[in-house]
Amino acid sequence: MGELIEIQEFEASEDRIWCVSWNPTGTLLASCGSDKIIRLWGREGERNWVCKSSISDGHTRSIRSVAWSLCGNRLASAGFDAKVTIWERDGQDFVIQTILEGHENEVKDIAFSRSGLYLATCGRDKSVWIWEYNEDENDFACAAVLTTHTQDVKHLKWHPQKDVLASCSYDDTIKMFIEDNDDWSCACSLDSHTSTVWSCDFDATGKRLVSCSDDKTVKIWQAYEKNNREGIRSSNGIYPVWKCVCTISGYHTQTIYDVKWCPLTGLIATASGDNGIRIFREEESKQADAPPSFSLIASNTTAHLQDVNRISFHPKEPGLLASCSDDGTIKLWRIEIKSS
Amino acid sequence: MDLSSGPQNLNPTIYERTEERTVQASDYDNDASDEIDRREIFDLIRTINDPEHPLTLEELNVVDLDGVTIDNQANTVRVQFRPTIPHCSMATLIGLSIRAKLLYTLPSRYKVGVNIIEGAHIQENQINKQLNDKERVTAALENNHLRAVVNRCIIASDA
Image (tube, rainbow over all chains, first blue to last red; front, side):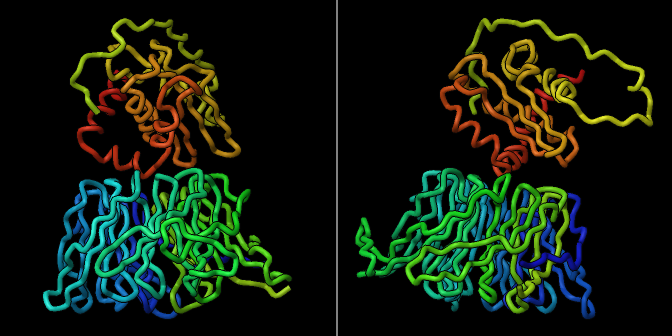
């Protein structure tokens, strides 16, 4: 068993905080929310985290998400004002590099690919946009508009090694998009949740995916490559095929808004509308072919006073987790696992 | 949402209003503390104006006391409402007004669910899903036009 220990609480805003995200080196935590302000939090001294800067001139409505580029010199924000703003580091500050327009209404998420070549955005207009980075012009150009989802697209996640994008939607599905000869297409639809899929995350290998939903369950999905020994075939001839191999249910009493799979520890963390944060660990299976199973090893059902909207694992320090909530606070947590 | 066309249900049945809550001596006692009950929740929503008629949701029997449940241990509030006709295009707006009123008045610890009574609307599931997606509700209430319409339903009720 383990414990979830609160390290620090910041009163970040009077309003809802929608998103927190660590930069790739873990020196800065970016936050955003209904007050239309992006804040950057950094260490002061050994332990104390403080607001290093706040950016308030980017959006005219709620900022739903912020994301970092792999190099850490670029920050992107998605707003309900239909805009995507790209910020570039200029000394200690971040200044607007460009504004990407194209979505019809609320933009809900943004994500930089690990290759650094692409930026993906999605929103209520049901579309996923892929933007290609042009180094010479230091600008992004639209490479594809994917309209496979039939509803609101809530969340995006790039594969940790390949240019493969996963998107979660109000249409209860997750879609995987791949690139082939400059052509983007939907490779696979992951249909098993019975309500809105709010978030998903790959494990460190990229061979598995975890997702969470309004149906109050967490699901683990496995990729099956071509000629897999289980004999799982693709309906459209495109591999890998993703299948649900485990459903974690019975723990959450409200919508699960976020799920993260820590690449350093392999732990899965969830953020829920029931105010709780929960940590799951995979059980070691006794048989090689046994389906995976996960157990709850730590939780705090009153982690915040209101809905927990997003969590982010620190990229360098194992077991350090940031969370944000409708209650306007951001908290830092340490997961401690006791050897039994 | 098209608000310019005339009302769909031209001659709605009008229902009696419930009596005002009886004021008790403890209501004036600042030291007395009691939990929020379902009658108080009902009082918050029964006076909301219908978007089409100069009538309240209670007078149109869109909401009644039986449709309100509260659990103070779990901090949950559930409101079920009944659109006057099963194809009412105003159902989402009515639900949004109920949600907005409770959002603006109830303590933030409550988890509020707003749903159409089972079988009372042809797009029941679709509307319920939309009303209980907080991201969509937030975005809707940030929309100036929609917020003005919702506020008209809510504010007039307190006059």
